[in-house]
Image 1 (spheres, one colour):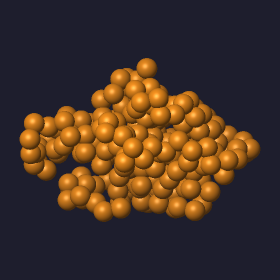
Image 2: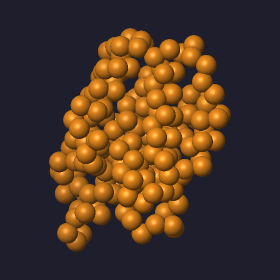
Image 3: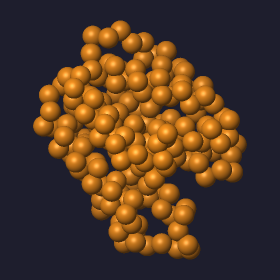
Image 4: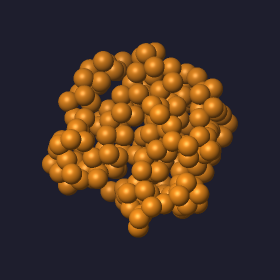
Amino acid sequence: MKDSPLLKKLTVFQEVRDLEGWQAVAYAATLLERMLPNYTLFCEVTEFADPSLYRNSLDAIWDWLASPKAKINFTAQLEKIETAVPDTADFDNYGVYPALDVAMSMTAIILLIQGEDPQGAVVVSKLSQGGVEAFIEATADGEISDAEIKAHPLMQWEIEVQKELLVLIKKHPHNASTCKLLKTFATEPGISNIGIEIN
């Protein structure tokens, strides 16, 4: 994945790269929780797929985090996810891009859990930030500079969330109450990473 110059300037990626085990998965799951409403809205508007499929897969990830001994078939989860990945060539609706970010993030987390992509959390971190950057560009009146994107309230919020999340994960132990705390942290503002209202 090629980083934009802006993403390099706003980097929290090195710290995310250093996360291991449950912390990496929890970090990625929390960011995905913030992104999921973008996929849900896209499915509702286009009737592309049943959004509960992705909700259930993310719930399975949270269940695994809360209770690592839980028997969850992540290979089966991955197969389900792959049946509902939108193709940008099939839609002229901008919402396909944030929806695709969710699909790619879900895949990255499961591959991280399976040990196939140790940098899965970094992938999700970049997709979330990159999605905010793309949304700001898409909704701007005309050209917009890197400095203007960086100063945009949504981007400021995204960076703040990712930094705060790193602190939270390093401060709390691996248990069910931490999972609950992280999920609340993601959903409490009532909007997704690009400002979509959470139903």
